[in-house]
Image (cartoon, rainbow, N blue to C red; front, side, top):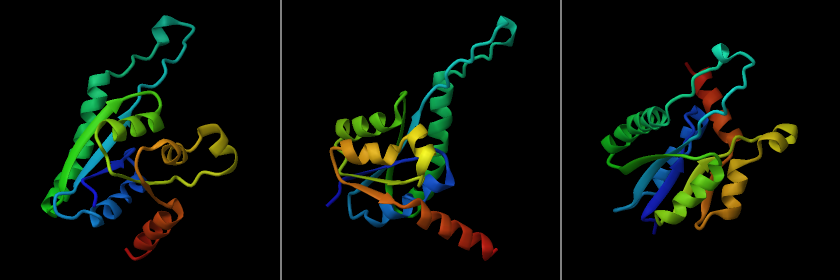
Length: 158
């Protein structure tokens, strides 16, 4: 049913919990695309030029992101999953995810929610909510509470 499943990752263990849900949906020729949006930090204004922080190199950040994604991809390949990785540099993460899905004929987006509420949601917004509203395909959201409970349960069993 799905030819390409997009899994946006932000480098957190929470976000990576979407991977098993995506791979469970793989049938035959389905490809999982591990994807990360890299955005450069805003330069800090410093009163003294000698205090200015150098901005990280965009290409270096993309390469670090791809290295992270490729480590995960290698594990999935060993399990027989067809997987591809990609990273882009953009300011707006939700827009980058939606645009990527549209431009690459993605059939399903699988991602976790960070479960923000109240003031933090107002300040930071919800990437998942924006993706759901604008995605050109279905979106499967894994609730943060379920993931956090699973992580805490695994830690207690150690």
